[in-house]
Each structure stands twice: as C-alpha cells, then as structure tokens.
Amino acid sequence: MAEALEVDVAIVGGGMVGASLAAALGGTGLRVLLAESIPFGEQAQPSFDERTTALGNASRRIFTTLGVWNDIAPQAAAISTIHVSEAGRFGFARLLASEQGIEAFGYVAPNRVIGAALWARLGAAADLALRVPARVEAARIDTGGVHLSLSGSAGAVPPGTPAVMEQVRARLVVAADGAHSQIRAAAGIATEVEDYDQVAVVANVSAHSPHDGTAYERFTAAGPLALLPLVDGSYAVIRACRPAHAAQLLALADAGWLAELQRQFGWRAGRFVRSGRRASYPLRLTRATTSIAPRTVLIGNAAQALHPVAGQGFNLGLRDAAMLAEVLANEAGDVGAPAVLERFAAWRVRDRAGVVRFTDSLVKLFGDTRPGMGTLRNLGLLLFDLTPPAKSALARVSAGFGGPAPRLARGLPVRHV
Image (tube, rainbow, N blue to C red; front, side):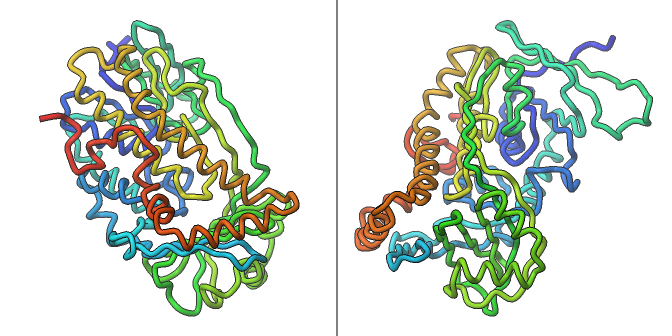
C-alpha cells in the first residue's frame, strides 16, 4: 500500500466557499489538500451553476485581497439602490448607496464567473494538493488526527476497474461540502432542519429597458420575490413560493411565466420581455448544532444553509473561510488542536447567529398572516424609510453581525506581519 499523503489541512468540498479557503491558505506554509468530486465547469457542479450571487462589500474586499476580484469585476453589476416593498401595501423602503457614502451596497456576479476566478488561482498554486475529481470513500476522525480514503469520481476509470484509493492523513479536516455534508456526518455533528415549505424558482429576465442598478425585494402572499441587477442590463429573479405553485411556474411557457411575474412584481422595473431557463431548489434552514468537533470544522452551508431572502448565505460562508484561514495561518502549533478550533468558533458565533436570526426573522415576519400584521409591516416600512440611522444599520449588514472582522475583509493578508 502506498504511503499516506500527510497534510495539515484537508478541505473537502471545492465549491465557492471551499475554494476561497484554499486560495486564502496559499503561501501560508501550511500543507493543504482540496478534494472535490465534480470538476469545475461541469453542469453537475452545484456551486457553480447558472445562479448568481450578491456579494457584499466585505466579500468584495476579501476577493480583492485574494487577488481574484479583477477577474470577477467585469461581470459584476453594482447594486446602487435597494427597494423593499410588500404586495398590496403602500409602504416601501428605499436605500441609496450614495446616501451611505459608499459606491454600492454590493455586486451581483454569476456563480460560474466567481468559480472560474477562484479555480484559476488554485490551478496556479504550487503549495496546494488538488484532488479533482476525488470522492471521500471513508473518513475516520479522532483526537489524534484525520484519515481520509479518496477515490476518483464515477467515470474517471473504466466500468469494472477497481478504484485506486489514496490515503490522506491530516491534522484538520474542513467540511465545505454543503448542506448534506458527509464530513459533518462522519464527525458526528447533528443538524437542526426547518423546512420553510418553499421552493425557489430562479431565472434571468430582461425588461424593456436596462436596469438602473436597483435590487428589489418584494414580499408577496406567495413568498419573497427578488430581482437583482446583472451586468448585461437584465435581472436575476429569485421567486420563493410553495412547492405546488413552483411546479406551476416551472410548467408555464415563457409568456405565461413572464405574465405571472409581472402580476406579482408590478411595473417598477418596466415590462418583462424575455426569460432565460428556469430552475428550482428547495428552501430550508439547516443549522449544525456546533461548528467544531475533534479535528473538524464546518464552514459555509455545512455549518448553516439559509433562505436566500436577504442574499446573505454565501457572504456568511466566505467570512467563515476568511476567518478560518486567518486562525490557521497564525497558528505555530497543531492547527487541529481544540484551542485553535474553539478560538475560531468563538470569533464566528455572533456573526453566524446574527445572520441566521436576521434571515429567518424576515421570512417569518413577512409570512405572518395574523390579523393586523400586514398593517404593522406597512407602518414599519414607512418608518424605516424615514429613519436614516436604521438605513445606515442595514447598509452595514454585509460586513457581518459582530465579532472580529477577518483580516482579508480589511485588505490585510491572513498572516500577521
């Protein structure tokens, strides 16, 4: 049997969060392995599908410090205005980036563009062991270390050929493998799952006139409806609704889908004239009961998978990756030691809890159909629109909900000088 590959950190999951962590650990002197079962560019890769991601300003700074923003920026649309409303009510709130003294609240970029920038960086890294495609066939985790058995993904070898296993020993394993994390399960970490009984229907839609940089969040009786500006002048639509309604929307011809979208959204963005391919995915709140275990740390959707209502899921996961890279890069001893992981968990707990509470509360607040709640929400939106301090507080949401800001988000390298 071949000798096991020895690394300090094994990252399982090469989606946007896992790839960002691997990029952040480049040049730190740590021996890092990244294992991903689906190569970038394949349609089956869920992290780099046709969806888009709204990147907050902290995320933009992280990507700038990592040296990948210049590759993303040409395909990223700035959000200069945020417009929040509720169908059937006259109240609304409007936030202008110029009033907050910032260029934009964030930027909307296609996931594949973000992935291409990250993987170009990883492909050029001399100190990273990339295993793509590679699948974790077995994981043994104890206080002494981590032992992974990796094999090529399906199709990498002719049918019937015995898989060639590679053995990996690591001081720490990072679960960046999504809401159904295999590593989280291997570490014995339980999850709490709340099914919102909603499905997100997503598509790119063009209006008769290009957008003006406004991102819309409209709450309807059927669920939240978001329109995000894209660099070509069109919008990314995220429509959350009940599963039966989602099935009806997916079954409509383009003309019917556009007509239904117009009816629910109104005419703020003009007349919708063209739609791209529609896709869907279920919406649940998945929370790990802890983000650390012996020799294990969870980041991104493996730790918390959120409703997309406020566009905070990836931004939160990226801050996980940035802070974990900082903690590990400045550890002179064992990177998998309990004290190291506890430090990371303590630094991230306020931000994680705050974002989860914020997004979950929005879903439930605007889904509350009790008598009088609609009027209260309407008054709340009107009051918010007239309160500059409240607007300033919301504008800072993309920077996090507390705890230390990662060095990468402040334009600093992960290692202390």
